Image (cartoon, rainbow, N blue to C red; front, side, top):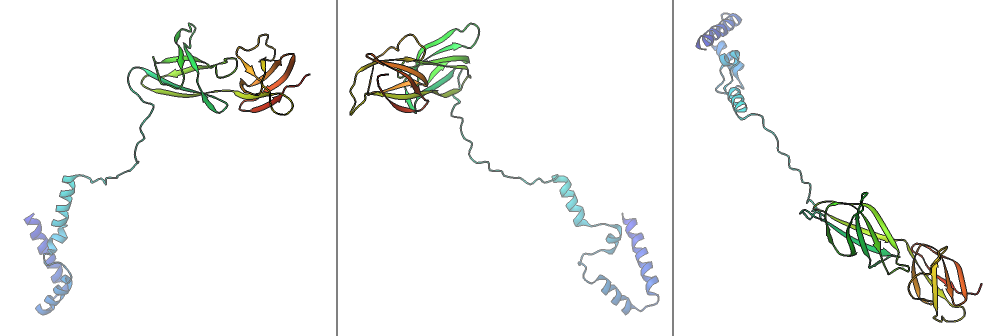
Length: 246
């Protein structure tokens, strides 16, 4: 390194002498001052020729030692909502509620395995409460006496997973009718009612002037000797039908 500096110094001096010729010392000083004006005090022309820069060498060494610097990015995804249906454990939980004509009603249900064996797992279970069941796939049949005729409604292929709660709202397609007597006011009297085409009358006590919840469909009724046919019940509908002799 020293030898290279000596050679560079001699070369720099030869170039300077060749360019200046016999110029006097004062001119030499003036040219040198002008050429070096604006340079740092520790500027070394030999190091400049050889490409030596201690500051750059030190920065490169530090960069190599520390490795590449990565800019850390903070991402705010906000609060994570808890899975309210995760309960843990080895069982599943079933939580059904039953609706009829827009209001929640009481019902019971039966749980049967959804396979060729159709084994009954639970029976006469109340709706509106959480019930633990072994994980699996089931057919669930709901029954309610809050609708005329105690109808049934079956949900098939209900999958209950281990450690999870399944909430299900079961909607019976139900309407409401009131059989009214003609004339002013309404006089209560016993009636019978059945689905169109059925041979048996529905079990239970029914009267005129009182609303009756029925599954959507067509019905016929009887008040004494008076028979009423073509009573149409619509899902979610509320109707009043006047009893007249036909």
